[in-house]
Length: 123
Image (tube, rainbow, N blue to C red; front, side):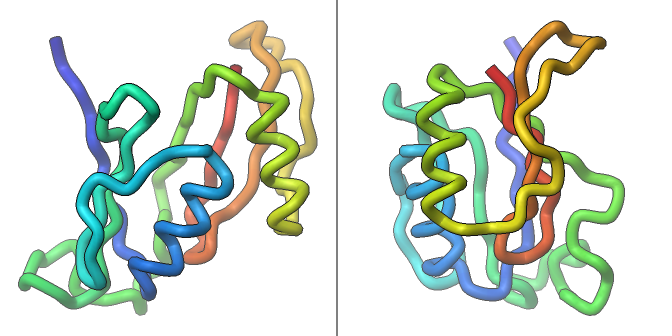
């Protein structure tokens, strides 16, 4: 089995963590101001947040490069209705409203997070 736990550079780990937890109804599994691990309700980590410039990782050194360039965070969720409602409550600009993706046959929507990362949320 191969699992992917992407690490993204963010300007404020704690603020981003709260935002993702509210959007996705997920949990913190490693609270901190420089690094955070977000897990689903089964305890499976699916995303890590890393403060820009900490721990000397070369690809996480500078937020001056456009965050998320070349990256789509594709998130499959159990309850798309709940996540859609959470997104509405967060009052963030939706990049693409709910629609049926003709390629996947799944309903989805798209938005950007606090740091400009593009999220595609699908059922």
